[in-house]
Amino acid sequence: MLDLTGIGRNRLQLRWVSAAEGQLFANYVTELSNLIGELGPFQPADFAIELAAAESVLSSTRIRWLMGMDRHITEGENVYHEKMEATAYQELVRQAVADEYQKGLIFEALADGPQSVREMASKTGLPVYTVSLRLNDMERAGKAQFHRFEGTTAKFVRPAA
Image (tube, rainbow, N blue to C red; front, top):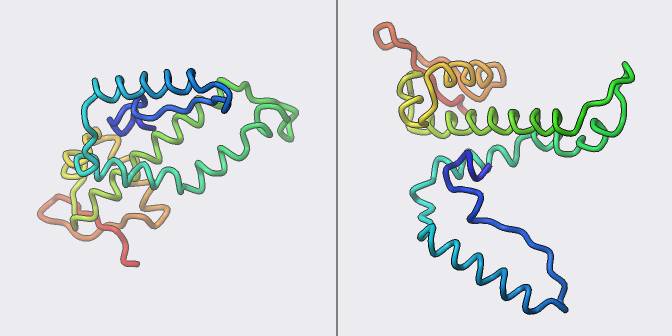
């Protein structure tokens, strides 16, 4: 997800180190410090929309459900006695995260008031077609709604809470 946001996966690393491996821990810290030094400082304000969208992915019921069902789906069988391969499941999760991230970006773009599909595409960097697809999903889920026409251009808003 850090790659989706443009932040990059190298800014975050997880390593398991025993308390008895002090030198290994020091080496990891040095390696990460050097890497972060090469990447430069991280300015959260420059990624405000992206971070908010990533947070929405992490709180998404769809993603939480998929992550919780990993072993059940890849190791068990469905009612048709079919089992999903782990790589296919990982691709399914990757696509679901991308979809939810795109919806999060659009939701954040709508914070500025009524927006057309083209305006949302410009703010999010997503293609117009992708915005249109995700906006359709969001309307069905009650996360966006049609507001009005300006000329022939439809404008959308976040629904009132």
